[in-house]
Length: 467
Image (tube, rainbow, N blue to C red; front, side, top):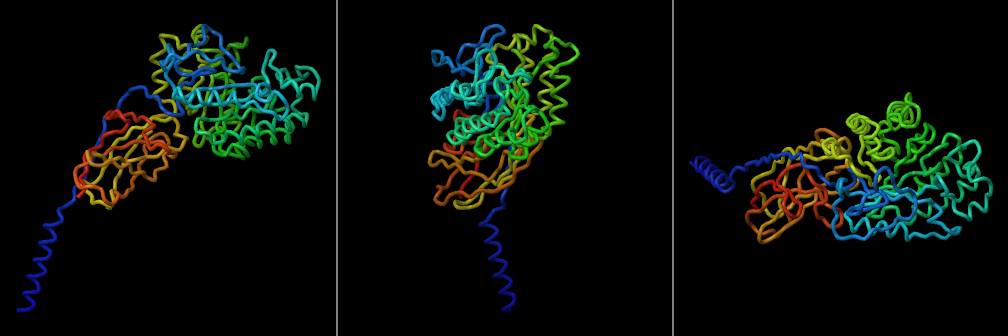
């Protein structure tokens, strides 16, 4: 009799438990992809010696390496005949930043960084040792080394770069540059420029090994947080740079299909495809950005009758993240091709599905599964945070996940995790939203290629009950 009562009691307890804890359902949200051109951090076109809202260069001309001539700003950030962008590029010669030996004029960079920030941009920077025309090394260095202002035997050297003083003094400047600016939140990347007109690397193969390594080390030892981008120059220099750090690469003549007087040779056919492989840069894009610059301006491509879609497709094959059109106009009939380019350049995140439970308790674990597709050709390189926001009229909480989105290469990516709901969250129905946010502000920073964004930049996933 007692045994029967025990069975009945156990059955009653189990029945009560099953009544009090209803079965949990899983909600799976799916999302509508958009083909909208997105302006996102670190990718796309960039302004050159200008910023969002400035007038473009006219015709086939552009500016080089001198202090920026700032235009009056009327508050309109749009760029006529040029894409909106999150990037600005500043190229400046050494002589302007170190006018006296050991005395630096950082104001030129500081003002550019502040202006970029105000225009919704971050700054890419190159300090070139000298340029073409009359843009020499600093006068104090010229007085020190003397000699001709065009070095015999190397048409794009202004001084003997194998003179140990070149590595010593230009290297000291690079070290000071890194010590001041590495990790600056408005500095997107720095070009690892060591020699040649405009810092483009001409004659790098002529550098003695110890000179080359000293200059590369000045960058890699002092820029540990801000990404470095190397010019595609030669096997010895590029492979040494890669051995020192995760460096990206760039070229300054994208689009040349035979414009240098020899129709049998071009950068696009006879130098870049081979150099990317032979110099060891083929897989550098997986850890650092590829940033390419127009040869002349895009109107030149148009005037020469070059195939813009071929040029675009080659750059995508090379995993381009950003493009410098030298603040010159996009030919009108090429806008469909350019928009196609922008929708593949760099990263482009599509959230395909997000699964989560229909309810969770305060201080409980909110588990989820998510499927993402990166429809771009590169990862995101800057650290941002994947976040979930729970919000209703009583409370709003932003919950940060452990996702490392820099590892989301092109193609499908799965991310399954859990976050804890803070204790004390009031019971009720919450809107569950998702976003990729800034480290400091915790505000959305990266636009997703899906519909459903609210006016704060969060994307609606569904409803969650906290019990």
